[in-house]
Length: 351
Image 1 (cartoon, helix red, strand yellow):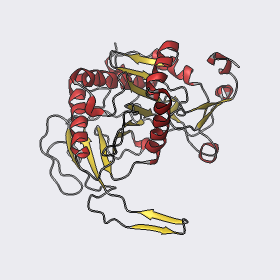
Image 2: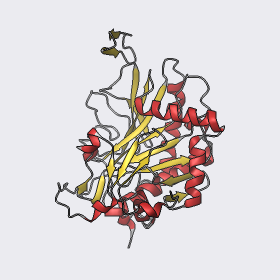
Image 3: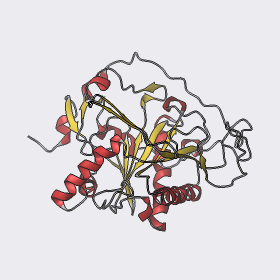
Image 4: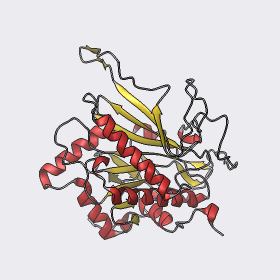
């Protein structure tokens, strides 16, 4: 047995996701095979700062008929076609434990990050991103004040290949009556570790990663960005707060400013890898609300980008991944090395 990760750099092996208990198959030797898969189309058209046909731009009419105000910073509204509704009747079904269903209440909001149609987080100014983070915090406070809401999910889908239907920079904030499956897995692991060790799982994990440094990409006063040891997606990353806060309500002004800087630098590094607007799904995981003591929780944010070898080659989670375990070719250490080499200056601004 060895603690040296270089011993695994060329052989197939499994790694454990300590947040969920699940396994990831790593097959680094496969990275030498020739690529004969699907080539995704690269979209490099220049977007205007305002698009009269965009339902998120200031002053425009949305699909549901509402007119947006002429907002100048981040703007939040109830999704016109919400996946969850606040007035859903409480109905349940359990037929001998074989047919099980129950109604779910929720509130789904959309947050437009900026009035500018042509910007992403990577190209926004830090002041603008900080205002967006402030809105995240304000909306969390508002939703957490509703007694029947037990979880609040803040997330972003970026890029058409991640299912984003509008290129205007935006994300979503959902408050719902139950705790989702992925969060429930983490909740169990966090609580189990805290009861055994008296410290949060991510606090101890973060110290290991900082000491080894081989997967750390960004470190500042309040946050660390790293490729998790168990990463399944090619350039998957995790932002972890150095202070084990339960949720975003605990962040002070300095922490929110640092988070804005962190988000900008990370997304700039992503874009610079293949000199393209890097697609991803990203979301914050934090403690359930209105659910008692959650001192074992530790705020963190996941980034799951699909690009594999270029701006045109996408990682597909199919076959063995759907039926067995997630599988990746190049190691998380190799991905961290690539990301660490990227400039903090966006490729569009270089030269």
